[in-house]
Image 1 (tube, helix red, strand yellow):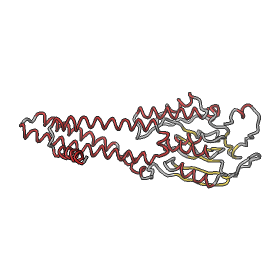
Image 2: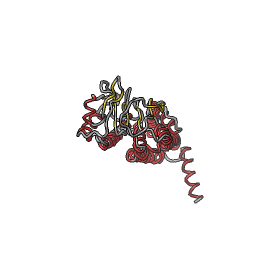
Image 3: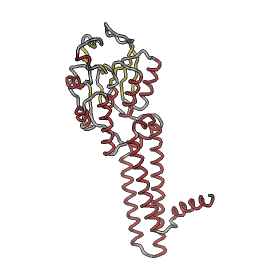
Image 4: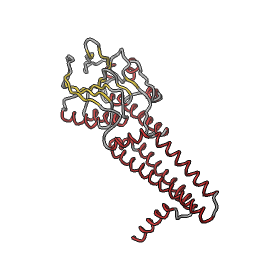
Length: 334
């Protein structure tokens, strides 16, 4: 076992020094190892998409593993580059033939340059991954506030204490909200005023509000992107009728390739349909470019069962009698 370890170490060191033949350095250390690493990264990305429901619950570990993989890729690339370059120089010294060796060095230079351009283009991605691994989401912060609901309700079986969530839906929000609701189980109304954020965290927050038995979700100033997923947690949902407050668009993330984005959209589509939204509406919402936003009218949202009543400017929320026996109200029970 000790001998095997030494052999491996010798192979790594000798390759680094350029002692291996140019053919071994280029085709084995370069081409085959790069291919194997790309397969590994591809499997990791596929697993990330396939098991995203689990990964979103352990997002810091996901980012930490991503950093480890990136470090391995960079370290391997440096080892390959130096080894192939030195093997090319030794090839010229031994054979006095420059064509193949020089061609290998030119190819290495092109690969290094393209890798540099790629890294510069992904600098925001690396920054994002690094800070999220440390538990500090650079996307932005959020604000949580507990207050008393001043609406006058004639029939209400739960407390008038409410929680307002504003700002960015960034990693860590769901855990903080869960802690608040755990300490204040009487809260049954959550106000969502957010332009969105992390789709995974929006789903985590949806799970938290559902598991904590939240009765109402309300938006006063707007709820878009990932926020709309969380909005679906309410058994009763409110927004202002005369304002386009719910905004929808496709998933988007620097961590996804196009096929992964498509897979993520299919997963969100399934989630929306499971919450009573029609497949046609979900398709429309997820077909909108991430750089744009679709704000359906109140009537469309009402017909889809996404909202239940509007917020009146003067009197606040319209009173809804949960014992109303009309067909319209019975169809809204979730």
